[in-house]
Length: 496
Ligand code: NAD
Image (cartoon, rainbow, N blue to C red; front, top):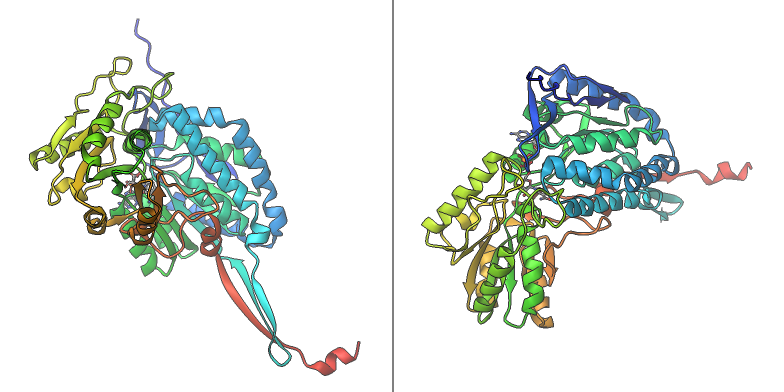
């Protein structure tokens, strides 16, 4: 007898302090990329549902804005503890819906928690400044006030971390907040918001709506939404930045990347190999700070080429929940096909395949979207691969005679998310720090991810806006300045 499979769990929205079943007409499966198993059904919420969330956030705003900052951070202290207590459970959800290893999932949650901790400093960070007697008897004061309703739209690759680049700062500053997570990985924030709901946060202060383009467009066009934070691909970042701008909204939009590392001959090659291997292939290359192109200088070429190929070949690929697995699958079957076709294009343009990760077989997970680590040597400067974000476990090697020529590769790139240098020379490091055209710089570091109290500083096509995510930039982004100039006639004070 065959037994019908139970219906897949429908993922609700969180609006006005309640989990609500979506009325969406379109739904999509959430799929475990390591196994192909469906984990749930996510609604592509329509404009009406998103408007309900905006209404709830708008209604909650006046009281939340009047809540003293010291009181606004109390739910965040509780949230920090809940995230600590549920770290393992949340990490498992991340691994199941995103594919990265459990260790990688735990690492991203650590950065999420760090952002909650930093936002707990709002009573200090939100302060303004003042000066007495800017003219005789006149005083001037700058205060920061929240904006109102703000929204964040986030990508698939850090389901548990990226929402926390925004949520804690937005609400600690007195705004009310709407999250639209990636429809490919909605389960992690579903659980995280359940935890947030346990903290006693008033209803409507944080809302979550699942969806895709229609939900995003409603957030972009609704007059009550004052600011948009976005992280995702460059094409969508540009679209969101321009549409938010046309509607008079503040926007910070982090886009795609193509990160370069330069390896000088005086680098510690063993350390460089290990760190660059982790950067290029960790999270299956689906990190916006993943090294994608390694530029070797002079004699570094041969030794690095051999050592990185060996390191890449030794990585254990599989289901991220399995013990000992070092690299998981890529997010979808379409992603796998796209990455494999880019590898093909690279070889067509003259690159030599030192390690080919296509047609990867992972015995424990037949239906997973696996691409194994791939190393291409001698990628042509004019070829498609040089400019295209691959977002998979593929490292391209190019060679330069000196640091000048190596830096020219970085100058040519449209992106500027991260650039790294491996060297033991202080002067080369200083020159690199000074000249490299990217917003996050690593010196002997492979993934130069800023701590929560520093801005996540992409440049060029990797970022559109002024204030970045995290830390002081987040406080600037989520508040507007008000300047008060005051004069009080002296004779009034003599009465008292
Ligand atoms: P994506 O651009 O496809 O999606 C990001 C978000 O935008 C999702 O919530 C999605 O629903 C929404 N979206 C997608 N298409 C849209 C459209 N046409 N109109 C409106 N909204 C739309 O990105 P992704 O594939 O989820 O994430 C991977 C990308 O994110 C990579 O390019 C990566 O480099 C980038 N990324 C950048 C950073 C950074 O800090 N710069 C960090 C992480 C990821």
